[in-house]
Image (cartoon, rainbow, N blue to C red; front, top):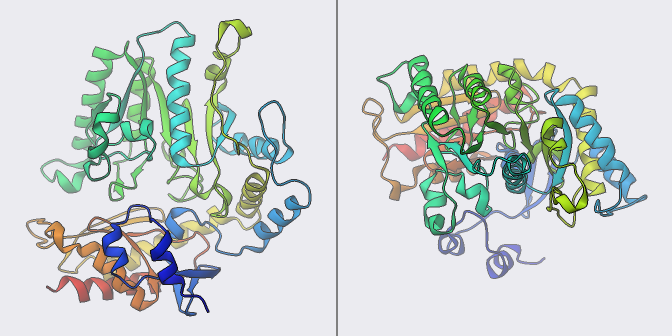
Length: 447
């Protein structure tokens, strides 16, 4: 049997990982999956509490998705969309238009959340240029935003840990505050929401002629630590955009496909963005695929004679890959057939009750943030003072690593422990995740 752990250390550079620590540690190597479980090369079983980084929807080795990919392999693995149409990409586009807000009518495919955002930025920029508004080239994002790791999407980010080192490479953006009640206890959520909206309103009224678009993660800022926005904030942002001729981009890469309890988070406030970015769960966690949805109004601004140069010059070799699109179609079929969203709300309530019963009163749990199946548990050294642990202790990382001893895979965002299970999980398995989290926090935080 091959020594997969050492081979990994010899050849792989892992993302978001300090490799010095990795090379000195014993690390899991995953070999197979089944349902909501993963198995390592030693045969140990782990509950996938983070959906393999937020992508898995219906579980691993889902028969219907497996068969859809196999069937498509008998027909075609890939053909370019440059100058040709491909059947699965057309079928999926029709399905996406049917389930997203009704103003979104066109689909531009890519391969990751970062590229979906990058495409949205370029489309928004060129839209205004094609319309003769040369000055509208600024973008607005939220404090603590994360929209991906390519240069354009990093320019919109505001998490210093991830983004500060790249500042010399980035273009200038405008940042508005995030309504985060946990960090601003002097304000009620409604007061904080209005304060942040007023900041955007002021910027929009003063500089609207320069602003191309606002981009926002609707309802939940995931990588920031599962920051849940007060209700009405997203709708307020949309209203200000409409009043000031600013395009609205909803980044639903993390929040889409049922994660917040509805198919898309923007539905919860009846928001109709001009552009929407999709990825992660679209194929059920099987293959890389992303889409940037746009309105007809935007699409039509790119129509013209060849010599007008209104064409959107952007593409990927694997745009609209037939295998990935077939997996996505099967994923959507399962949503319909199994009534996934209808069955999800009782699970969300059960998860909320489990978190309240087991974690709320722990000495080192400062905050529990939940929107649907997206959960962030903030760990603090002193609960009354909301004093964080010293960063060098890496408490979040230690808690999630200990959880593996309990048969659960979790992942930290700093000292925020993330729980984000597949939508197919059952209540007994939810209970297992929360129990493992409780045990791990008690074991690690009593320092």
